[in-house]
Image (cartoon, rainbow over all chains, first blue to last red; front, side, top):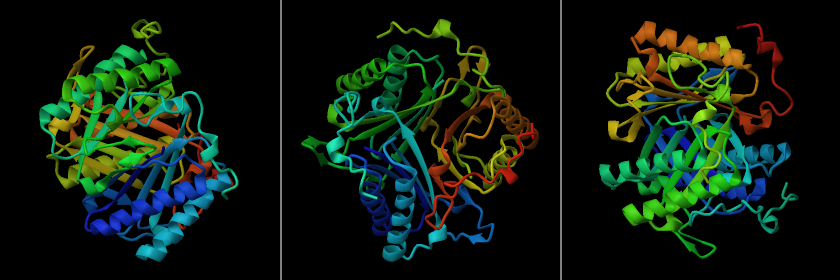
Length: 138
Length: 138
Length: 138
């Protein structure tokens, strides 16, 4: 159910961008206990429109920096959120050689009535399908 | 007062996009009991940067899929939110032949001090104009 | 730590856009008591994709309208938020001759576990560095 917004500097291949999106999706399901279903936007920015501190508290960031924002139901514990950050960063490093310092995350949570997955209904207004939630996934 | 972000795949006419925005605005006023005033962004994505499950739990989505995100004050009941989803979907189907399955919504609510409509003031910091709110609109 | 999203109509110079981003960053640090560190996206829209009421309750807006969205930890009082609005608007007026009516703000707050500044860790999961917070800054 989550909505993911992925921002990065333009110049990467479609395959590279798709891999980021796939990793965010897979690890979200694996770590956060959210129902499946994919809604993701990727925005490619000119460097001048994508701003970050290249050196902050000795944490050096490169032009490969990625911002990942995820909006979902409040179903994950702090430990699950941290597990998600680590799982995404490890996978992006393994698959795309993204430096761990180059991945910024912002999570935002909303209430069950705040999503409609289609057909104009309040998909979770009568409850979230707990059989697809796995609190032990972390 | 709400901020709406509308995302879709590139290739639709300016009139088609404007109709989506107008429907979101009109139904928001009609269903959610929010003060008027329009702030909307429309982002047209390459198909490779706009990702959704084309077939999820037998809910088939087409390349005409639209993501609608709305950020507003916490003034609407769950019933009002569901009425908003249905009203937008029905209107988009009627005006643009958008399939009901192709409309995804995410609502987010914030506190009154979290908006400034202009002039550098906290527009609602001393309260929301209840005379323009209509809790009976649904 | 905040994530800022700045939206405006295309046609402004890179220097103009950078000045907006710098003002948002500087005033955020000055007024909101947030930890430093910059994460900002600027999105330039075609006029037809950036919609606002040009005349609402006698508040006239021009094509230089700017939407500023800021997502940060819940560390600021309503007074600090209003001080931020005013400081940004005053500075944009001074530096870029932006009309005060032309700046729209939306703030959103999240919990400490909802940010990762890099390395795949939950940067604030064990607390926010209060030594860099200054509640007396307003």
